[in-house]
Length: 448
Image 1: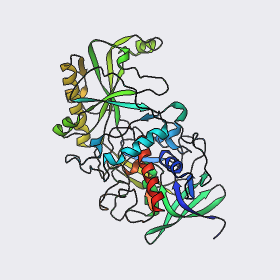
Image 2: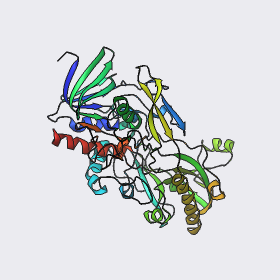
Image 3: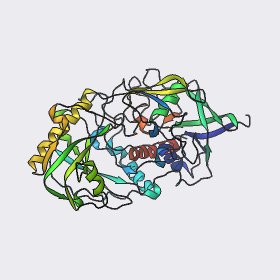
């Protein structure tokens, strides 16, 4: 064995939310762990030629991919929400839905993820109207001082960190990963792991498998790409002024946010997805007056902007492929095709119809929305939540990893992060990423 070959029990590729959670959970164990991160302590500048992605149809934001120790936790807002129970259930109107693990089975890992992230129980936020059709949903926020998971990482004797370490490919022999080829400032070297875990993000996870020609006998790697399409669409004008306490978050450092989602029964009745909306006060329609108002917020308002966040149906043609253009390392760049489907669009129309009806029923106000006049979506943006490209499932013909996140046809290769999500829900993915990473760490300790 040469000096440029490292043997280890577990090699974790990527030091974002998934990779650092794994490293933390494996710290102090009997296992030797090696963590590879292509970035450094400071995030690479944007645009980053190593992370440039081609996109067609809807645009994937270039600044949504962060190459740094800590990954996107170095730039995120800290919003924290676990998936709802319906998100993991098979839904006969949502093709490709149903997780191979249950909501109840994940609960202990959700609690551990909350504790590790310093998430206190969400501060109750009083709902400003009651409805059986629209369910209040509360988002917590990780305290600002803890949001950069790289800055808060504590070294451990059994965990070796390698920054600026670019993984070129994963080499397989038979049914096992044999070695991982790495390049850093000193040159090329290899790692020989007992187990490899790819935790490089929803796009890079698929790209690395495609570059390495792994896990793809049924052409499933990269398919089912999902995000949370978001847009401001619609304005609520209330009959009476709303006090600012109706929308103000509780606490400046770690606020709770109140949104509304369609009740499970409504989703089943209309056969739509589990999307949600948040409301943002508009003190003035006129832009100049709105700017003036910022200096001194009034105690109440009558205008609320509707912020829409969509769950997407898993669609196999929304996918990550390899582009012909090469990055500075000589590797093919990622190309993402991402668009909205009929069910995605119909869900928002139904949502706005229900929202209008419920606001009127509760004598709150009126919703003015282009969707209620036959209008269409306009200026949809991504939420930087890249999901689904190495999806979890029991059938290798329609998934990439099994219920333990192991690549179906590679005995010692696992995937971590939101790329394993079979469905996207509407919640920010970080809480579920952390819960699944803790679950995977427990599995690896038993396995090895």
